[in-house]
Image 1: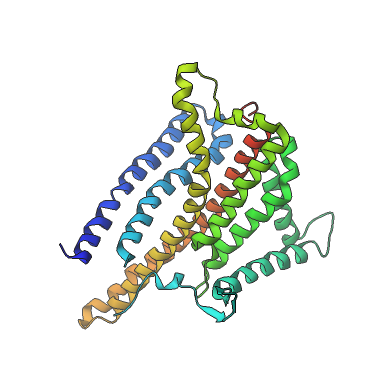
Image 2: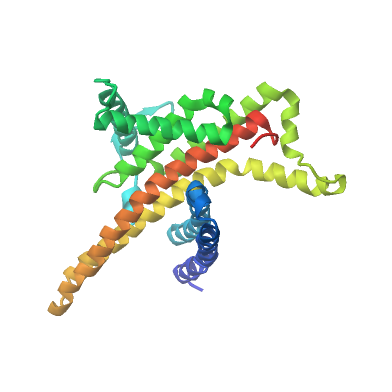
Length: 75
Length: 251
């Protein structure tokens, strides 16, 4: 197989990581809303944890993107 | 059309300088680091130049950032973590300002370089190790031994050790990847605007407005990400410092 074609396929495969990030971010916000609707009094105190969880989840997806870019732009 | 979205991250030497076979040129990267430090210094100096009991807008911005970081350390690392306030505050302000200044059109994002973020992260972890050994002596190694039955420790100690040693990587790649991805996305959508606006079919040209509004929306998201990543970098630093100070005991 030609190298550019293989690079394209590899980069596409690396983007599967975004699926996991999507599941993770959905979980973070879904669980937060569940907890917040059950106990609205405690919701405000947990926003920092919410944002922290969101950022940590989002970063795992971006690791996949970095791999994709490394594959794409590797000589 | 030759529009490479990665071109914005290229480092160009402004003042070429070679010492002893090493390339130590003053690059656009160095220039923007100087600008970031200058902007922080200017902001803090202007904010507290006219101190008053009822703060002006500038002064209250500086006070908010101070209190924000102080609260963050207080909750994450406890009272004796406040000794690291200057370090964490400097780190937070540097990352925050380089993220924000990088969003200006035509500027250079310092934190989109893995060399910069990894240096910062490696320094944080090295400091945690030094603080841990200085405070607990050889007892710092208890950090790698969680409370668990002895037969599980065979498995858990290597896992704890690896997770500790990969922290500088995850800490640096998180910030670097977020900045890289956001700026690449902006440039990709910008190239959509150009290629649609320059399309040969006349009815395609007005469609260029759609990716343009998407750029505006993504820029708003990037402002959030810029702040959030500086916050995450700082709070993870606090959490690591807390482990160096208290091992697994507190919080």
